[in-house]
Image (tube, rainbow, N blue to C red; front, side):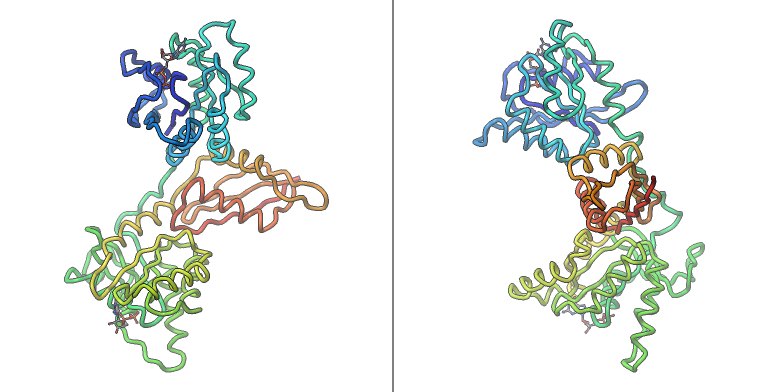
Length: 430
Ligand code: GDP
Ligand code: GDP
């Protein structure tokens, strides 16, 4: 997805029409005109991409620079790359510079179009736009078509080769582990979800994994819940029981693709809760946090719970959260979308070109701290695998764990990865 941004009147609509090969679409001469954001399918050199014209000028009190950078920010939320249009005959204005800063911070690939370069004499105006710090400005005339081929070649180079690849689903239902410490409400939740549509798996042809698994319809879809027999069996309080139940939990997580960790929202989070969460992360499975017994919560508990979450579950701040009640059925319809979100992230692959463009910009803005007086060079990265996404970063020297965490944080900020652990390893190359 390519977002076209720029202040009013620089020629965005004209350029969009030029790219789409249309002449007669709406081009408005009046600055400040409100247009809705419109997406088009574009095609250049046989490659298709989606182009979003980010019009939408609402006059407001923040001034033009604020408006334009807010627009750029919105566009960035969904864009793979940005086409930033500047009027070369005017040069870089304050608003242009505000946008440039937003774009720069975002780490998204940016192609800078220096528009209204209608003939060669104006090309010298283009060079001044290097000062925006966004790389080479491409001189174009949206009106006459001059330079638009080179610009579009640059756009294609900036866009990912293909849309981010999603994990190809194996045939059959996705595998879910419903886990949590004793008494959080696992078997109640299972009963709530399964309702009457319960089918032990050994009765269903082709889905046999283990007779203790169960097909459950959640959100209109079938999911294979792993080791439901373990949930239904009431475990006694004898010593050793906990040991076996934790082995069983580990095995269920291992066999699953995604785990719902059920927590008792009515009670203080415990170390045991954290251990179960950590088991999911260590196993590299997708994660959904479900806070059960929400029906019991009053305002006071809600506040202390938020504090406990930010203290004890900060490591998995990326996991989707649903607040549910097995007793009343509250919000259980939000479980299926959360499971899908986490599973999608778990199987996401970032194309190498895009990953390295991102890495180059992130490292340029924030280089790793020096080691032995020298700043290690970050060379490139590849995504070695999915489920969960695993990245290998090549550098000239070891990068500190703090810097690895920084890269993970930026990866999450820029690419999402809601609900999946990420692995980042560093390889040193001379
Ligand atoms: P937007 O507000 O950024 O979408 O800008 P428009 O596409 O509506 O264009 C604003 C004005 O600039 C219109 O009068 C266009 O005809 C004019 N314009 C757009 N591109 C060019 C160009 O390449 N050369 C010249 N000379 N004028 C242009
Ligand atoms: P498990 O050990 O995790 O399988 O937990 P259970 O399903 O056996 O539930 C433990 C206790 O919590 C039982 O007394 C349930 O009735 C109660 N319980 C489960 N879910 C809820 C809920 O959403 N709200 C309330 N108030 N109680 C619940």
